[in-house]
Length: 200
Image 1 (tube, one colour):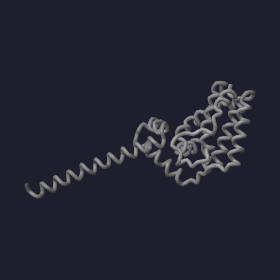
Image 2 (tube, rainbow, N blue to C red):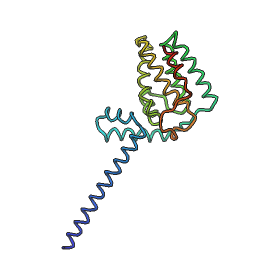
Image 3 (tube, rainbow, N blue to C red):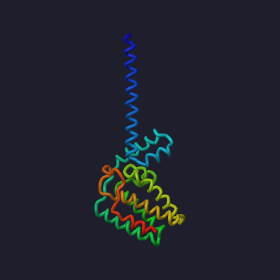
Image 4 (tube, one colour):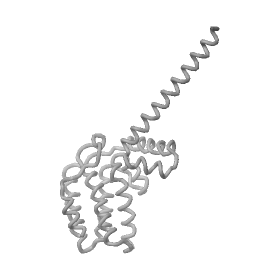
């Protein structure tokens, strides 16, 4: 066999190997993004209707998040916010709309205290999704109900759901450990039953 034929075969093998490596790397990146973002991964891909664009969006979020100094709350701040949350829950019985609006404001202040930029709701929700992917959709749903609650257009059932959604993110935000050590959503204590009772 002529030497040029061997060269062509070698080039063909190199191209095939390079393609296989590229495919495997892409699959690995996809797997890592799925694990990092959970349900948020599916939501973004459905919204973008293109896997490549959706994954690029998620990688951009990670880069932006990596530039931020997100820190756990000091114990006095955690205790203060936890007390405020109990007051919000108690208010729900007599003033459900006001309680949901207060919950929105409280979650907002906790995020700001942790170091998230709070200029635009959708932008900070995207950044929150990097650290809290399992509850960020709850946050979006709760915020939408809160906007309706401000003009008294939300039902009591919607308000109850919104308060529970805010609670899931609130608990996640109050955790003392760094977000990088968190593989899934955590909860602060086990008083969800009290949340359910207060939101009736």
